[in-house]
Length: 154
Image (tube, one colour):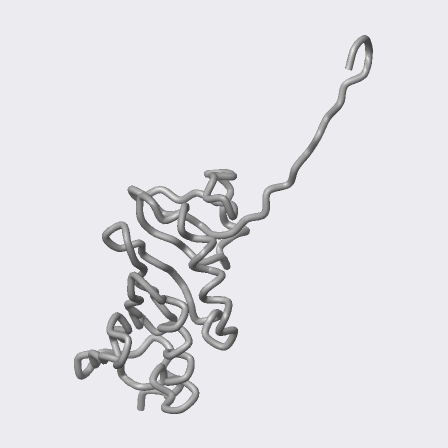
């Protein structure tokens, strides 16, 4: 403001996720804008979103995933597939395929399956939720060690 006052407005941007694109990582905010590209080590606990358009859709995805708090800590990464839907990578190298529409209800179905049947503790590799009336399960190949296996090898 003239003649001798400077007006400064600082707006802090809140980190949402790490974005991986073309082998590079960046920290993004809720609007999908890049906050920074270096010194990301302190943000290693954030979900990694992958894909060219992933930042634009990341906030909506994390809101959906947050509706099931018992599953959210298992989420390691999310891949934006075909410009229309997400694949979620859970701890234990389990891939969850969400549908293009009604991802929120599909995620809620997975939480219900987990509560009722403990599907994430089984030897599964892929859980496909793209069909609204069923869960398609692909088992892990025999002899494949599970990353979150609670037992010990003897």
